[in-house]
Image 1 (cartoon, helix red, strand yellow):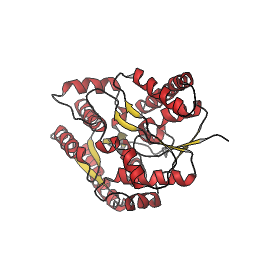
Image 2 (cartoon, one colour):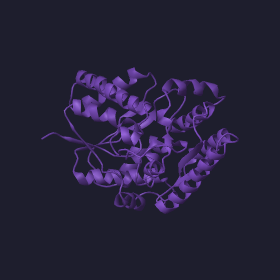
Image 3 (cartoon, helix red, strand yellow):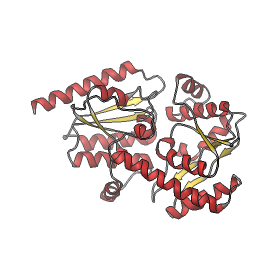
Image 4 (cartoon, helix red, strand yellow):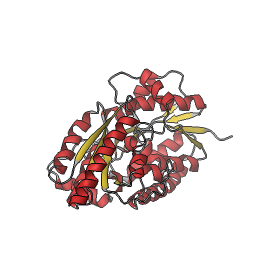
Length: 320
């Protein structure tokens, strides 16, 4: 029987799961992802996390606990430091392995390689070689697994550039076939908020039902993100935050959208700046609104906000 490595279905999962899934399978392990978020998973995380944590941090506690109850042999929770020059991940990402181990008892052994890609692909291959050796595989096997994992990850990114949302590219949701003849909307926020159907109150599905064409930050070509990063006098410090701001600039400069919704987690420190920057970018160009999510968010409130915003966009488009 293959040893099983558990990966929580939240946070970095929404960007890097295709890579690590192929990597560990190529090493000869079975990969188990935690179930999609449920009320039980969220409630457990809320109960066992410090009260001032944002909802994604509360969620990952519940997901890790769900994996432990599955009986996996290892839990994979990398320490995400930096994947691009001059930026880092949110401080909670940096300390996440320590936070989880201090909060949850009787966990399986945790794999927490330090992801700091100072030298780009060379750093990634080094990390993968070390991770393979820590699991009893050879360094060469780890390097080969890394190469195949990169191919899978690039295929995942290409599918998103072609118009799939992250949730669709991961196979977590399918489009219903509704004709998208409504307004075109930039839905900007961190992928682990927008693509989690439970914590977002099925935001992607609600917009699709209303015929809205949704564009997300992940759909912006990487070369355009790099170009926009050089156009700002000073970028933010955080990986996901920068991508939201650059995506807003991209869609608004090209006049590709009729409106912008910024999705944020209540209590998120970086988003206090991100939201204001996106709002200023949209000012005088297209309507803008913010949806703040936490463990108390209900679908009824989201529906009310969405209906009002979409109706305004439709009326504005008709009267133009």
